[in-house]
Amino acid sequence: CFGRLEGKMDALTRGRIYNCDLEEFEERGVGCIPDLARVFKTCSRLCMLDLAGVHVDAARAGILADGLSGATFLRVLKLTYMNLDEDSVVHIFRLLNECRALEVLNLQRNSLHAAALSAAVETLHRPCMLRELDLSCNEFGPQGVACLGRVHHLFPKLLRLDLSCCRL
View (tube, rainbow, N blue to C red):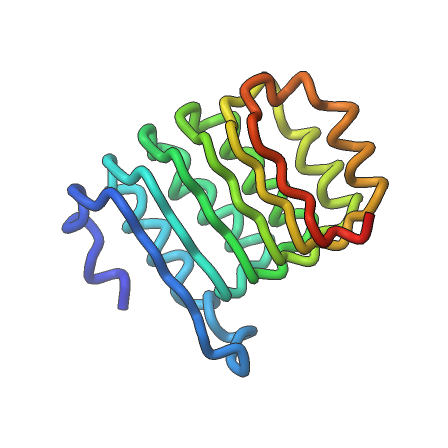
Protein backbone atom coordinates (compact mmCIF):
# COMPACT_ATOMS: atom_id res chain seq x y z
CA CYS A 1 0.00 0.00 0.00
CA PHE A 2 2.95 2.38 0.53
CA GLY A 3 3.92 2.07 -3.12
CA ARG A 4 1.11 4.46 -4.09
CA LEU A 5 2.88 7.19 -2.08
CA GLU A 6 6.08 7.01 -4.11
CA GLY A 7 6.96 10.42 -5.52
CA LYS A 8 4.17 12.15 -3.58
CA MET A 9 5.89 12.63 -0.23
CA ASP A 10 8.73 15.03 -0.96
CA ALA A 11 7.56 17.45 1.77
CA LEU A 12 7.45 14.71 4.44
CA THR A 13 9.71 15.60 7.37
CA ARG A 14 8.59 13.05 9.98
CA GLY A 15 7.53 9.44 9.66
CA ARG A 16 6.21 7.09 12.34
CA ILE A 17 5.00 3.53 11.77
CA TYR A 18 4.10 1.30 14.70
CA ASN A 19 2.96 -2.29 14.48
CA CYS A 20 0.91 -3.04 17.57
CA ASP A 21 -0.13 -6.51 16.44
CA LEU A 22 2.67 -8.61 17.89
CA GLU A 23 0.88 -11.84 16.97
CA GLU A 24 1.58 -11.06 13.31
CA PHE A 25 5.05 -9.67 13.97
CA GLU A 26 6.88 -12.03 11.61
CA GLU A 27 4.63 -11.14 8.68
CA ARG A 28 4.85 -7.38 9.17
CA GLY A 29 7.57 -5.78 7.12
CA VAL A 30 7.86 -8.58 4.60
CA GLY A 31 6.03 -6.62 1.94
CA CYS A 32 6.13 -3.07 3.24
CA ILE A 33 9.87 -2.42 3.66
CA PRO A 34 10.74 -2.34 -0.06
CA ASP A 35 7.79 0.00 -0.71
CA LEU A 36 8.73 2.18 2.26
CA ALA A 37 12.34 2.38 1.09
CA ARG A 38 11.23 3.60 -2.34
CA VAL A 39 9.01 6.22 -0.70
CA PHE A 40 11.83 7.34 1.61
CA LYS A 41 14.14 7.83 -1.36
CA THR A 42 11.79 10.57 -2.55
CA CYS A 43 11.52 12.24 0.87
CA SER A 44 14.45 14.60 0.59
CA ARG A 45 13.34 16.58 3.68
CA LEU A 46 12.85 13.60 6.00
CA CYS A 47 14.41 14.49 9.36
CA MET A 48 12.82 11.90 11.71
CA LEU A 49 11.83 8.27 11.20
CA ASP A 50 10.37 6.06 13.92
CA LEU A 51 9.65 2.41 13.09
CA ALA A 52 8.56 -0.01 15.80
CA GLY A 53 7.48 -3.63 15.76
CA VAL A 54 8.14 -4.11 12.04
CA HIS A 55 10.00 -7.32 11.20
CA VAL A 56 13.19 -6.53 9.30
CA ASP A 57 15.58 -9.27 8.24
CA ALA A 58 19.07 -8.57 6.85
CA ALA A 59 17.92 -8.22 3.24
CA ARG A 60 15.18 -5.76 4.16
CA ALA A 61 17.51 -3.84 6.48
CA GLY A 62 19.80 -3.37 3.49
CA ILE A 63 16.89 -2.14 1.39
CA LEU A 64 15.83 0.23 4.17
CA ALA A 65 19.38 1.56 4.58
CA ASP A 66 19.64 2.14 0.82
CA GLY A 67 16.32 3.97 0.85
CA LEU A 68 17.43 6.23 3.68
CA SER A 69 21.00 6.80 2.48
CA GLY A 70 20.01 9.90 0.51
CA ALA A 71 18.10 11.48 3.40
CA THR A 72 20.59 14.28 3.93
CA PHE A 73 18.45 15.91 6.63
CA LEU A 74 17.74 12.73 8.64
CA ARG A 75 18.54 13.65 12.24
CA VAL A 76 16.57 11.07 14.27
CA LEU A 77 16.25 7.36 13.49
CA LYS A 78 14.35 5.10 15.89
CA LEU A 79 14.16 1.40 15.09
CA THR A 80 12.70 -0.37 18.12
CA TYR A 81 11.10 -3.76 18.83
CA MET A 82 12.38 -5.12 15.52
CA ASN A 83 14.59 -8.05 16.63
CA LEU A 84 17.42 -6.94 14.38
CA ASP A 85 20.05 -9.60 13.75
CA GLU A 86 23.78 -9.01 13.27
CA ASP A 87 23.62 -8.37 9.52
CA SER A 88 20.62 -6.06 9.93
CA VAL A 89 22.44 -3.92 12.48
CA VAL A 90 25.46 -3.68 10.18
CA HIS A 91 23.21 -2.19 7.48
CA ILE A 92 21.74 0.30 9.94
CA PHE A 93 25.16 1.41 11.19
CA ARG A 94 26.24 1.87 7.57
CA LEU A 95 23.82 4.81 7.58
CA LEU A 96 26.06 6.58 10.09
CA ASN A 97 28.65 6.88 7.31
CA GLU A 98 26.12 8.14 4.78
CA CYS A 99 23.69 10.30 6.77
CA ARG A 100 26.05 12.87 8.22
CA ALA A 101 23.21 14.84 9.88
CA LEU A 102 22.08 11.83 11.98
CA GLU A 103 22.25 12.86 15.64
CA VAL A 104 19.97 10.35 17.38
CA LEU A 105 19.96 6.59 16.84
CA ASN A 106 17.60 4.50 18.97
CA LEU A 107 17.93 0.71 18.71
CA GLN A 108 16.10 -0.05 21.93
CA ARG A 109 14.65 -3.53 22.49
CA ASN A 110 16.14 -5.32 19.51
CA SER A 111 17.72 -8.31 21.30
CA LEU A 112 21.17 -7.18 20.12
CA HIS A 113 24.12 -9.32 21.20
CA ALA A 114 27.78 -8.31 21.54
CA ALA A 115 28.69 -9.86 18.17
CA ALA A 116 26.06 -7.77 16.40
CA LEU A 117 27.25 -4.59 18.09
CA SER A 118 30.89 -5.37 17.33
CA ALA A 119 30.16 -6.08 13.65
CA ALA A 120 28.08 -2.92 13.42
CA VAL A 121 30.70 -0.53 14.77
CA GLU A 122 33.30 -2.08 12.43
CA THR A 123 31.32 -0.60 9.51
CA LEU A 124 32.09 2.93 10.68
CA HIS A 125 34.79 4.41 8.45
CA ARG A 126 35.01 7.80 10.13
CA PRO A 127 33.72 9.52 13.25
CA CYS A 128 29.95 10.03 13.17
CA MET A 129 27.91 12.95 14.42
CA LEU A 130 25.70 11.03 16.85
CA ARG A 131 24.81 12.97 19.96
CA GLU A 132 22.51 10.28 21.39
CA LEU A 133 22.72 6.49 21.11
CA ASP A 134 20.04 4.40 22.81
CA LEU A 135 20.91 0.72 23.05
CA SER A 136 18.80 0.04 26.13
CA CYS A 137 17.04 -3.27 26.76
CA ASN A 138 19.33 -5.33 24.54
CA GLU A 139 21.27 -8.53 25.23
CA PHE A 140 24.91 -7.57 24.64
CA GLY A 141 26.11 -7.36 28.26
CA PRO A 142 29.67 -6.43 29.31
CA GLN A 143 31.20 -7.55 25.99
CA GLY A 144 29.09 -4.99 24.14
CA VAL A 145 30.17 -2.23 26.50
CA ALA A 146 33.81 -3.23 25.98
CA CYS A 147 33.25 -3.02 22.22
CA LEU A 148 31.86 0.50 22.56
CA GLY A 149 34.84 1.44 24.72
CA ARG A 150 37.26 0.34 21.98
CA VAL A 151 35.57 2.58 19.40
CA HIS A 152 34.70 5.60 21.56
CA HIS A 153 36.77 7.82 19.23
CA LEU A 154 34.17 7.22 16.50
CA PHE A 155 31.56 9.02 18.60
CA PRO A 156 33.24 12.36 19.43
CA LYS A 157 29.97 14.30 19.82
CA LEU A 158 28.09 11.68 21.84
CA LEU A 159 26.36 13.30 24.82
CA ARG A 160 23.95 10.51 25.83
CA LEU A 161 24.47 6.75 25.76
CA ASP A 162 21.64 4.65 27.19
CA LEU A 163 22.63 1.12 28.16
CA SER A 164 19.96 0.56 30.78
CA CYS A 165 18.63 -3.00 31.13
CA CYS A 166 21.42 -4.51 29.01
CA ARG A 167 22.37 -7.29 31.44
CA LEU A 168 25.60 -5.61 32.41
